[in-house]
Length: 407
Image (cartoon, rainbow, N blue to C red):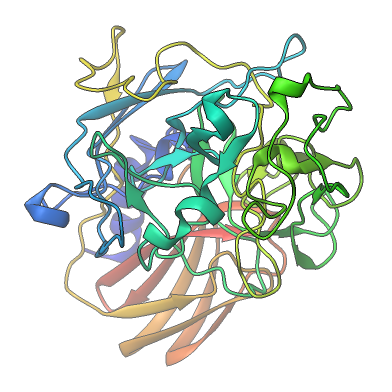
């Protein structure tokens, strides 16, 4: 197939899918090869369906990486058969804020549930001094910092270390999931300035431990009755054992009380509210870990709660099934590309000579080409505006199409 005909073929094939560029539709780790994870259970996201208003994510809560063991945790991961509904048009909540409840509060992009900081237990079972999952259950986390709930729902309370590589990242973190209010969740790193400029820095929580020696009041200053007091602060009940040991201090860090901020990101160059996981300089989890005690946005009914979504029948509206774009190749050619996201240039290496590199918009519109004639090198991206693009590396009649995020 000559170059002109192939380009026309590419635009037609990709153009049929070009409207599906919404990250809430395209960011999931889809299981397209029937891969199995723990105990032979299908892993990652099994299907993504979408309408103009919603995205439906079907999953088992079993990731594609190895999980376990869980010291002291008697539970066993099981297929949850979840279908989560996430709005494509998230809105801020301008009324009474919604607490992030026990059970799942969002879903990571590999279909694993996100739990908040609670571990479901409280002092004297009063629901006033609620235990923090990390110090109270952290010993049962596996190497990926997850563990199964009594119903078999494998989940993370904190940064999912096996999902992505974000160790002292020099680039903006990727989307790692979505909260049930429809807003994205990123890893630990974002632009220093919320307008999308400046260096990439670690996002910092605005919560800190309170300066208390007795647990007789709540973080908002509310005094408690004697019967509601928590245990004294001591070696058995140190600060940080309970969520109410923390207080929010506006401006202390880079994030708000929900553990997010409105900002420009590579996936949303025009700006969006986004949550970030919080870690310290050694990548250790920092409270509130993922989402804060409350959601930023409006939450659709149907997802929240420990057992909601189980054996979900799926969408009750007309939907389409998302299929990642696959452009037929005239032959096999092995390429590696990076970094992605990138700023000034995209580096590549291949097992054969690359003749040409072409940039296309996310809609399949040709932008420009570069002559290469090398098996390794770089392709300039310096004049491209931030956003999502397609890069076509050409070797004879062979092509490699990559989705590239320009920061």
